[in-house]
Length: 181
Image (cartoon, rainbow, N blue to C red; front, top):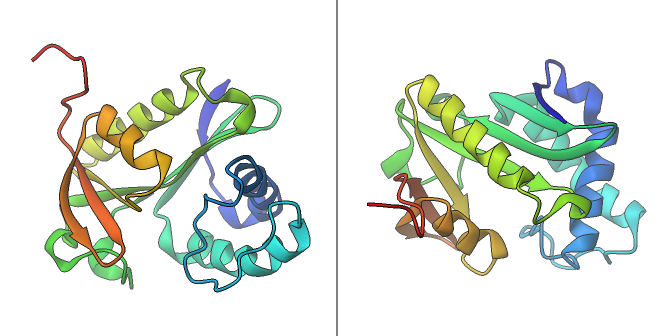
């Protein structure tokens, strides 16, 4: 298992689309949230999912992600994207209060259903936090409060800093549950 930077993420679109669909299936359509879609595709309908999600994925791969990392063995086991040039992008879903040169977002963070609970997500998240800090950025996550990921981030050292639209904004403080203080 290794974590590698996707140098040409657009060329991985088909593989990433299949990976995200597996995640969508395993969460019974909860993640990705597809919040812009009135009628979400069935978790059993790849073609409908592709129709809805592919243009969004293309947009993110071309212009939104500053860095994309893939954890893989023979296949994709997890993904995480970093978005840190926030002042140069149209990121309507990020509040003005954190849209500056010091903030870095952890996005597109997910693991394959077959490796959940085995520590791969923790490794990927730690990698992303370390990389953002290496770049001089403060790690943030913008997520939905009703997703399983919300409580996961809280356990991993993120703290809620604000509600914004339908989202919640979390900032990494490094204070993990159960950690010595």
